Image (tube, rainbow, N blue to C red; front, side):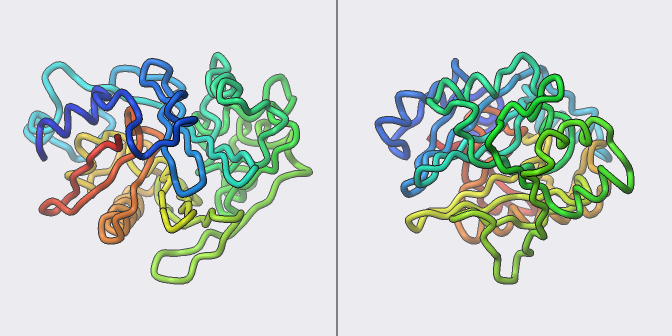
Amino acid sequence: MNRIVIAGLVFGAMAVAGCNTSKQAAAASSESDGIFSYKLGQFEVYMLVEGERDGNAGILVGADKALLDRYIPASGFKHTANAYLVKASGKNYLFDTGTGAGGVIFDKVKKLGVANDKVDAILITHLHADHFGGLQKDGEALYPNAKLFVSAKEHEFFTKTNVNQGAVAALAPYKNRLTTFEPGTLGSSLKELLPGISPIANYGHTPGHTVFLLENGGAKLIIAGDYLHVALVQFPNPDISATFDMDKEAAAASRRQILDYAAKNKIPIGGMHVVYPGIGTVQADGNGYKFTPAK
């Protein structure tokens, strides 16, 4: 993989939104603010950074020192946690909520002109704490009017089969506004969950991990959750999984499938653990993929 592209991915060299953004979006787009804006037809998409820390390639399974030395700079790399806000035809949709620590995502949503009671829907990629932690505080819903969407398989596993009490507590304030759904599969017709938003099964990281395809005005974007964790290594080597992946073989297959789909169809892809700007394009590169950050 081109080292220049890698450096841009790791250190967020793409600091300011460019020609893909509207004037309104561009004004709010800043690496220093941890907000990247992206225009998708008439939709306004905002990638929101909750926090960034030093990355740890030790979470990768089966990646030996020689491979890591090939892709990881001696100076190290950064790991990020992101969420996404989408303003869509008068509606406001939040994709994941971060951990909730410090109210970072909550405050950034407000900074973008969306009051907490004006978030219409929250779509959860999966039920790990760094994705649902910002749903509630002290047992009260932080987004009191939002409908909550979680895949049926994910909900079943973490609230009944292998109960995660943190997830149960986070979902509880939304119980009367919670909708479970069956995501579609690539290669078959997808069904919209909300206008312009179709869920796609991407199982492996968790039993019901879901990515979302957004479409508006002929433009498309995939919000792919935890499809990877160490971008420097997993883009060029998508068969390598992380310790966090519950079914590592299935996660690798899902990762390769969504990257292949994005590359072949020239659809930009965004993730919750890809550093600023978080969104970019992928293209086939040998047995893996090359990621180019959006401008």
